[in-house]
Length: 391
Ligand SMILES: [Mg+2]
Image 1 (spheres, rainbow, N blue to C red):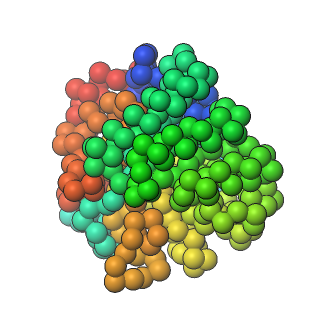
Image 2: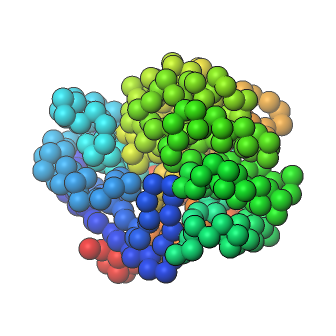
C-alpha cells in the first residue's frame, strides 16, 4: 500500500476564560490555546494532530508551515518513523527542545491517525494492541482562583469544597496545586483537602517547579504527613541535581517530565535517578513515535509512565490511545491505579476545546474514560466548533 501526502493545514484555536481563569504557581491562565494540524492524502484520507499547548501556538504553526510541511508533501504517511527522523535531523541543530519538537509532535500524531484510518485499525492496535478498553482517570483541579487566592482562610474553605465535589462526581484520584504561597500556607491547603476527602482518596500534588531543592524537601515532608502519593515537578526541569537531591531525601514518589522533550531528554531525567514517574506530554515531547521509545526506556528502569494531558479533544484522544496500549508494569494479576496501572489526567477546569470540539465526545463510565474504538484516533472534529474557536 502507498499513500501520498497532498495537503497540510494548521488551525489556531483560542478561548478566553474570563471569570473562569485560574492560576498555577507560575502564571494566570486567562485563555485556552491549541494548535491543530490536519494532514490529507491524495487518496482522501485525513488525520488530526495537536501540538504547542504550553506557550503561544503561533511559532508552532509557523514551524509547520514554513519548515516541516515542505519536507512532507508527496511523501507516504505510512513511513511515519522515517519522516520523524527526517524532520528531527532537519531541525536538530536549532530545535532539540521546544517549538520544533512540538511541531513534529503534532505532525506525527496526524500521521498515526492517517495510518490507522488507512489500515482500518485503531492507534492502540497500531502500537501493539489494546490492553484496556477504559482508562482510570484522575481529576486535576484545586488551582488558585479568583482575585482572593491570597486570602488563605477563604481559599482553604473553597478548596476543601471543590475537592469534595470531585469525589461526589466519582473521582477516586485527585491532583492539586501548590507552590504559589509560602510552604506552610500551601501545606494548610493540602491538609484541608485531605481532611475534606478523607483517607481513601489518592491525592497527588503538582508544584509546577516552584521550589529550589531544599524548599522542595521541606514541602515534601508535609506531603508525606498527609499521605500524598506523588510530588510533581518539585524543581525546575533543568535542575537534574536538584531532582536527585529531593528524591534521595524524601520517601514520596517524584514525578516530572511534562516540560521535557524527546527520548534524550527523558534519558537524562531517568539515568540520573531524578524521577519515579515520567510524565511525557505526547503533543509536546515528540508525538506517538517518540512516546513509544520513552515508554520502553522508562519501563526498563522501572519508572512508571503517566502521560501529561493538556489541550483539546485531539490531545485527549491521543493520550487515551497511548494509555490503552501501555502494559501493566510491573505485571500483577490485580493491577492498582498508578502503582502499576496507568491513569489519565482529566483536567477539571473549563475547557471547551476538549469538551465541545469532537463530533462524539469521549465517554466516561464507572470512573473511567472509554477509549474510542474507531480507526486511527477514533475521533473527528466538529467543523462548526472548529470555526467558532478559530483565530
Ligand atoms: Mg504538571
